[in-house]
Length: 357
Ligand SMILES: Cc1ncc(COP(=O)(O)O)c(C=O)c1O
Image 1 (cartoon, protein in one colour):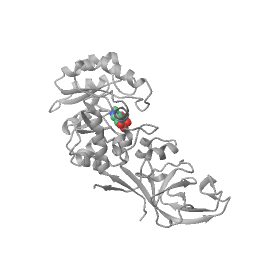
Image 2 (cartoon, protein in one colour):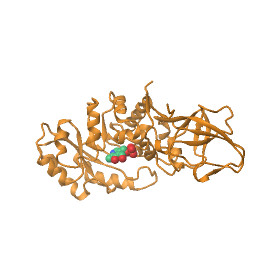
Image 3 (cartoon, protein in one colour):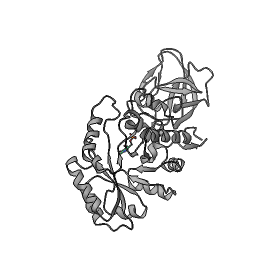
């Protein structure tokens, strides 16, 4: 059997969720869209179900997968519905729903649910992705609240630059939200991971942590609160071949590494088809039998190469961690000029093993 695998530490997931909830000071929907950022949405939801106030996913397909697995907690559709006929399923499966445009209110008005919908009305406070414009928000809210098809309403917005701790945009978005929505005295939902970790002045009744649940930081630099997160995913494999090469000899496609000293090369069963970043450069950290080591040469589809010269005891079968407790996902992503979001969501083919201590 190919030795590549991803270990998912469910205790760490719960620890990070509790931290998110503590920081937010209210309730928290665990954002488990995109298959829980590559960690497996059903297993993550099951691990959190006893303590999570609910879950958030991108779309109805993701919500139905959770319901089919027996998850009974509230589930919010972060992008709402894409077509009016989804409202029947939203009703049957008792899903909460973002409303981000007036056509969705028209559709709700035409619908015949068996019980009132719970709606999160999204304000575009400056990200300019989804949400009602500030000048339209109050009127849409009043219209929504007057509909018999609508029960509870939460006011919500999403920050575009909360990961930039010295950027004024988050304060500007917050001010627009407060001017537009806070006077309504309805519950509010503001914070993603970056706002929870880095903006203690931004608090609301409902937080929406995603990335931080998985133990990755949204910030480019170490941060005292983000440092309390525990990595959830460990991606590891083994050395499947070893060779010694002479000075001047290249390794791998394109000769991206050329030996400057006699070099012992370990070939590891892990490649970009598994989601390891193809363009991670020479020197990207790995851990070899628990010791710090380095990637050398271009990453192939199914294999990559590491420098074993300083690891005389390592050889065939040595354990190589690509990211996890010893090798921060943020470091690997940054070295490859990617984000932790992107690398985690890109995990493929590697079987996941769930560890619940
Ligand atoms: C509307 C919304 N809320 C919350 C989140 C979670 O964000 P993060 O993973 O940065 O915590 C996302 C993620 O993209 C989102 O789109």
